[in-house]
Image (cartoon, rainbow, N blue to C red; front, top):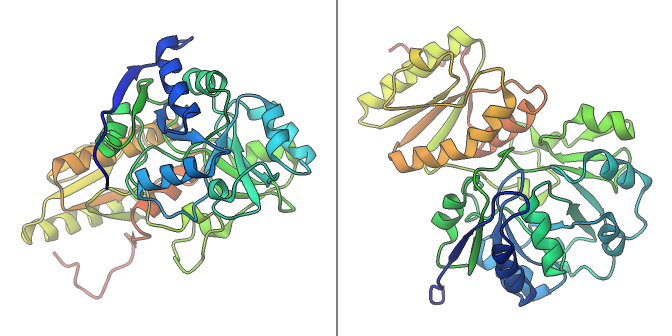
Length: 363
């Protein structure tokens, strides 16, 4: 583990963000160290993308498997031209349409990018974040910044600086606090080395939005499969991820059946002495039992649900529930990305509310 260091937290909200805060973090990055910073999606844990030992420090702090590629954060499109080989035309079109913003593109890497950053792959994942503090940090440091989410591996991604401090306090020298993030789930990842391009991770930028700009794209079948035998192509999507401590089960189906099923399961678990958490929408929350009830927002507001998801997972952790039952999220628009995160957090435990399991549910 090594000894704990002091973690300094600087306020970096506002545009332009506090220059002293940006300078302090930039100095750490230039020195080969780690700095956590806000982006519009989730908080990132950054280090110099072109220094192999900096990538190793990220893996150590997160306790993360090192076959998991890091996303390289840039501030100018010309940065991408340096780190990619044979950049496809689609990259420029997508950057014009969505950058700075929550889209990551996978392209062939140039010799500049160390394998430590790409998880041993010949491709590199690149994004230009849409957050003033992130862009200021990249520019001020004069470096490209490799950054996964700033959490312990497997925990819910951080949407507040306090989440970063909870996981990484004492392990990294600096955290830039930009307040609550705007989107709340990680960027869409599209692989441009495939024809047609393939979405490896759904996010705020949807399949439809991409197709308007570059024509047909396909979805990696592993991203929404409830069958864990279908392996997603993006290594980061292989592990149980984004997860609260309590065992999470997603209940799918017709609204009335879902409510009845979740309440029956709740009573059964409470009879066994378990503390039960319920995750539902504003509309249905009052109809549930359970010990701790949390709303994800209005059932039809995918963006609000995305923003709240990880924060609610951490609130459940703090409440000490043993088990969580969650309503499902319709897979339309950003809902597809939220559903993907929910299924990953549940380790693919999904129950169909319409199915009766041999009478054991006669509560």
